[in-house]
View 1 (cartoon, one colour):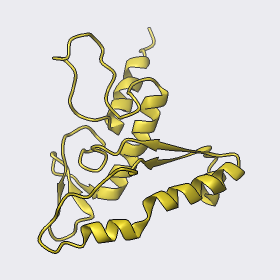
View 2 (view 1 turned 90 degrees about the vertical axis):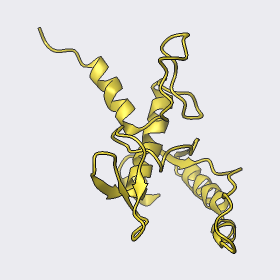
View 3 (view 1 turned 90 degrees about the horizontal axis):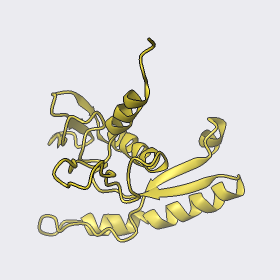
View 4 (view 1 turned 30 degrees about the vertical axis):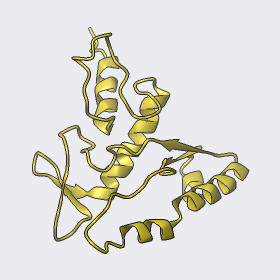
Length: 155
């Protein structure tokens, strides 16, 4: 929180994992046990209580697709079998998976503030037809596209 304040941040954004349940893994998988020992909601609540005292705000965004889609809009990621923290983009670029996720979480928050997406991370439709609407969740590349649409060349 001190780092966020020193950088001038007024909002800290988390994924809303309140009702998240891990999928069944391999036989005798400790995934459920590890998740429940992690106490995500307690961490969010403690951060919110402390940050509100410092005049900050904590926001929650929908987690769907934040870690499985590339921030640059190139598509779904493939995780390395040897090092799960590395993700390979469709273009072949290798990137840290958690950093990719954090960029998508931030993008989802900004997309909601800029009215480019709903709170649950789905894109706002540009027309009544559902055929043209992308099924890809909001990523950082959507903000880049929105910024490019607002920039007009000087005549």
